[in-house]
Length: 148
Image 1 (cartoon, helix red, strand yellow):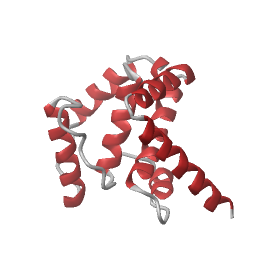
Image 2 (image 1 turned 90 degrees about the vertical axis):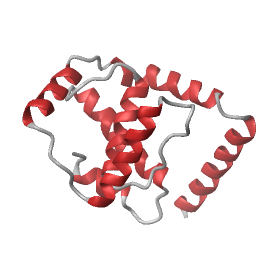
Image 3 (image 1 turned 120 degrees about the vertical axis):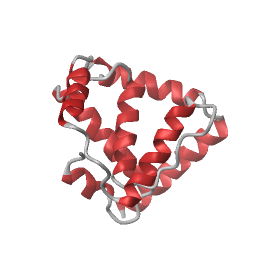
Image 4 (image 1 turned 60 degrees about the horizontal axis):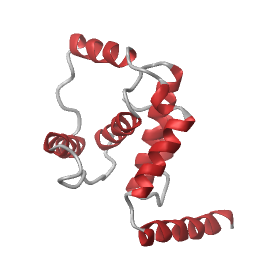
């Protein structure tokens, strides 16, 4: 369950779904650093954050087919559908505890600064020059309007 402050930060007026999801990913990184649980890779940490965002009702599209395994896409679709329906069935305490303990055994290293920088670089490398340039220009534009 995401923290109340994360949901409030994500729901501020005018935030795009990807920006809202970023708040949940940031929260997830903090949890791993605090030792609440771990992750095997930076991608897993990001995926957990996106999953929480979808369950909280952020309108994030499921990943494109071919980029992730098909069962991951199906899970994302279920999370989006579940968010609109409200609360589904609660996870049994035994399963919940097992999941938490399994995550606690994982490393905190994937959310270190170098690991996150490495992940950002590899993700950027997959994008075209035009796409990266457009993102930089949009960032500059939104920065300018935020400062006024």
